[in-house]
Image 1 (cartoon, helix red, strand yellow):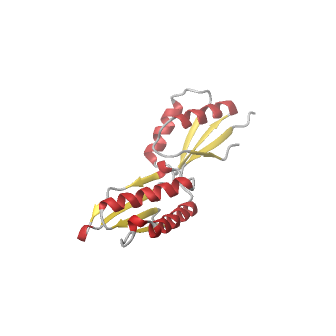
Image 2 (cartoon, one colour):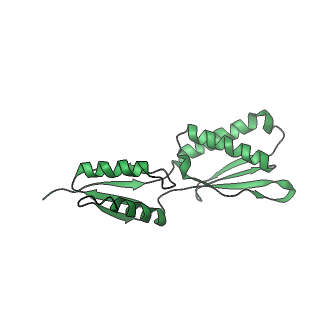
Image 3 (cartoon, one colour):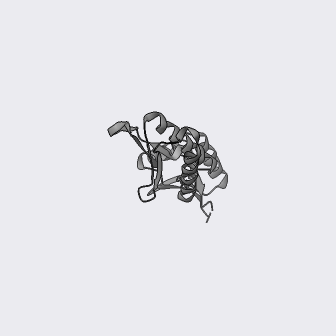
Length: 166
């Protein structure tokens, strides 16, 4: 009997790298001339999986966000997995923004990926949604390689990672 080969499709960010990027962003904000005398903060909430930004006004908030994104990109954190909310303006003109970090593939995206892969109509190919990841199974390794190449070309709003290839 032929052995089935499989791989998992997941997404996520390394929270330790995000923590390092947040610390680097804090240092840069503390040292930059255009942030002197301002009260700008960048905080990582690990439990919620989000980064909270706060600044004196919208202009500085955008600058803080750009600093954070640059540091995240430098640390290799996939920027597609960032989900920034709309900036909120509070009392005295203070601006706040929450940047959610996507961990795992949501159900809607998983269904869309599954549907797209099944539309390829490859022999004996199976796609299973397992919580926040997908498992693609086939008796042929070449078929799995073809599916990986197809998924890399597609845009699903998150950075897809392939693992557990066996």
